[in-house]
Image (cartoon, rainbow, N blue to C red; front, side, top):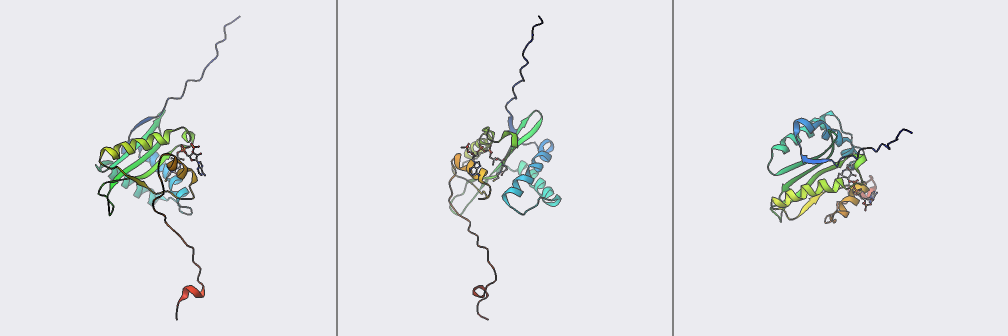
Length: 173
Ligand SMILES: CC(C)(COP(=O)(O)OP(=O)(O)OC[C@H]1O[C@@H](n2cnc3c(N)ncnc32)[C@H](O)[C@@H]1OP(=O)(O)O)[C@@H](O)C(=O)NCCC(=O)NCCS
């Protein structure tokens, strides 16, 4: 009887984590921004103009010593991205800011987003930042859940009220 060997699928290698190379990675990272921006700003549509401007921002950030860009790469494809920057506030001269975080859908819930975020956080800490801030949209429950689980807490709240032109708002004539 012929020996039948069970064929095992090769395990998918863990994505490589490395600094963004604008020449190689820009298009993939720009493609991610449709989901990032359209899910965090409902009603906003990423168009060519926005994409081109974002590409310029990324190229500038890649040369800026106060900013850091990491990507995940798997099987030759970019599948994750995180962007951090140093900034100043009224009370703190060196604060970290997470400008963007994304992992491809097939990597969500696998810990790769936390790995990316940790790389940015370590870099910011090495640059002298002991606090890191970020903005997230309440409508993006998954992102908020992710940041909460990695240690972020709400410190400021942006409040919004939808106004309709009633007599109360018109004021004295
Ligand atoms: C945001 C993002 C990077 C997080 O990565 P991820 O791998 O999906 O995150 P994780 O699965 O590790 O963590 C999400 C957590 O929120 C929880 N969660 C999921 N949906 C949720 C919801 N609607 N409300 C609250 N928590 C939620 C998950 O259960 C999970 O927690 P758990 O691990 O304890 O179960 C990823 O989802 C992504 O790339 N999203 C699209 C781009 C984006 O919106 N980026 C954020 C810009 S601010």
